[in-house]
Amino acid sequence: MNPAQVLKDSEDRMEKALDVFRNDLKGLRTGRASPGMLDALRVEYYGSPTPIKNIASVTCPDAGSIVIKPYQADDLKDIEKAIRSSDLGLAPNNDGKTIRLTIPAMSGDQRKKIAQQIKKQAEAAKVSCRNIRRDGNKHLDDAEKAKAMTEDDRDKAKTKVQDLLKAYEGKVDDLAAKKEKEVMES
Image 1 (cartoon, rainbow, N blue to C red):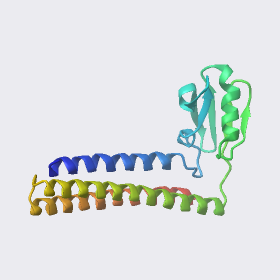
Image 2 (image 1 turned 120 degrees about the horizontal axis):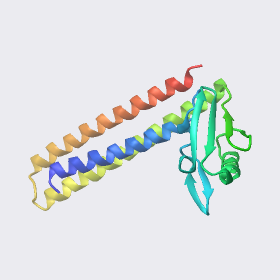
Image 3 (image 1 turned 180 degrees about the horizontal axis):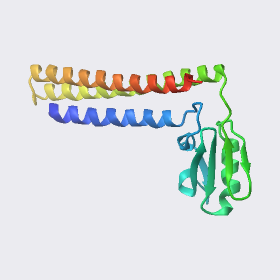
Image 4 (image 1 turned 180 degrees about the vertical axis):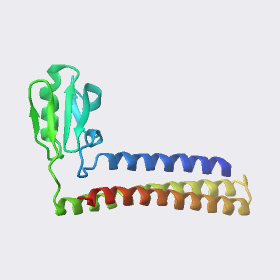
């Protein structure tokens, strides 16, 4: 691999790690209802776990509730069962056609726990990016040993990979700070 390919590969992989972190943050509970809270929820549908948005429409009529309307009425019980068995801590209200979830206000302790969870997920995303940097540096070392590039070219490319890492760690920190602020708001 030449330095440009290593940089491109590292950037693509770091972007994927950032996307995973973004999606993890969507599933976290803030003080407001959001359809994203249910993205990680899987419903047993004809024997296979299926994302809830594939079998039902999920809407938020107001900041304190989520309404789930299954595309097929038969799926109502399965959706309710999946919500009850999840770690969301929400009690579904089934009226026979839709399921309504009321999002209770969070206590200060709950907010602090979620803020800690955000920090852990942010650190995990940064570790992923650091592992990607390590892989990129290894490719550069291998290319230099194979005489595919000079030592100076390798060092310049390693500096660029390090700069890329710093940029993505900054993006992770920004996303984490924004989500933490959202969680800590009353």
